[in-house]
Amino acid sequence: MQYESDDPVAEFNTRAQGSLPGLLGIEMIEFTEGRYESRMMIKPHHHAPNGFLHAASIVALADTTCGFAARTRLPEGSSGFTTVELKSNHMGTLLEGELRCTTTAVHIGRSTQVWDARVFDPAKDRTIAVFRCTQMVLWPKGGAKGQ
Image (cartoon, rainbow, N blue to C red):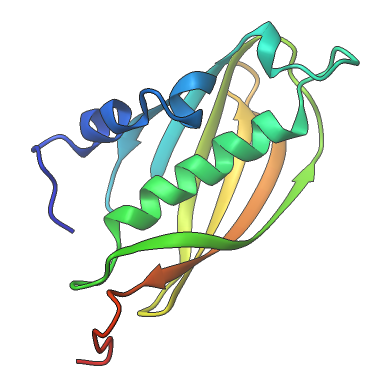
């Protein structure tokens, strides 16, 4: 995929401003050939009313990281992607500090992509959640994806 700048991390962080990832403070920090990483500093607005980290905050971090990764792997001629399925398993919580997410591709196809993510506490290298999502590749209306 073509980028508007030579730094896709900075481009994605700029694009996130004013949307949910930007409002939650999700920041992409590294893209390599097979691994993508993000972080989010936990603030009180990430908590549920019971005082624990809200599951939706974890899912937003993982889905955002997978989505930005999917964008880098879209086939030529596609017009975008959308999440069609996601699953998360939560093993712990974190009340303050930094939360990180890494994601890797399981499947990159012309119609779908599947991504796995690990959300973790980097201070203790402790897994908070694991996540899997399927992205549907979108094609322009009237365009033939097989060509």
